[in-house]
Length: 378
Image (cartoon, rainbow, N blue to C red; front, side):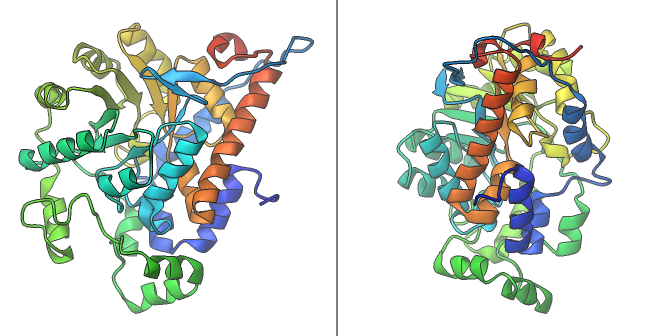
């Protein structure tokens, strides 16, 4: 563990321990992956302003996201197939986030179900919702999230049509993996992953199988999923979802000023500036490049969070400096999970917290609430 000093270190260990199709699922973008790369590269281009001979004692990273106290302005993002990076992955990640004092967001397309995660946590977590054609199923998901005491609903707005991800197609991605000769050989080379998977019963989309109409087993799941993402999703749907849910609503997938204004007018408690980690519209701008324009567009009418490209605590600081009240991380915690299970998620969070704290101090600030554009080199 002493040699795992960065998120990149965790990524390389995860690459060795997780079967290729699932590692590639986490570590890929759509088409040319240009937007995926831009998310990281545009963060790297932002430079920080070093300050000296200022009081750096008694620092604090504590803040709030949608009114909830957090130990640092970071939440674990909703990621599909998390339980295929490591057995029971969503449950382990949720426990790590709870112990760290930050929110965990469960994906609709998770391997562990809403009820699974609720069974191992005491702090309310957030639930991410995909809108399907079957609105009765959507309502049942919301009902289950409410029963599990989820404190926020995160509505993903940018997956009406799925961007083509070449690695997933070439790898024949499925959950559980098809038992082809190539997959069996790949899993045999990763015995730790394989043994953990053999010990769990959670190897498919447990929020869907047994809950969606006509999906009682794996043979019906693929056809249902391919047919269910609703291309007609509109702002009218946001209205009825918000009313039916009745709690805090976050809209994820905002990358345009006009859409940001629509989201603020819809009454969303927060928006997440996101391009789905570069996995949807290839050629779209990076999230950090759009953040200042979106912050200006909403003009304080809703909280603004950011997702995509964060690989360090310095990236978190840069996002906060440009107006984000919170950030979401997906790949960093997935790399930690694939590398070391729950301990790896905790280590990923510790790496980000340490980098964020040290960078804040070296920029001459003691409180995360004091971070603004003054820490950036102009």
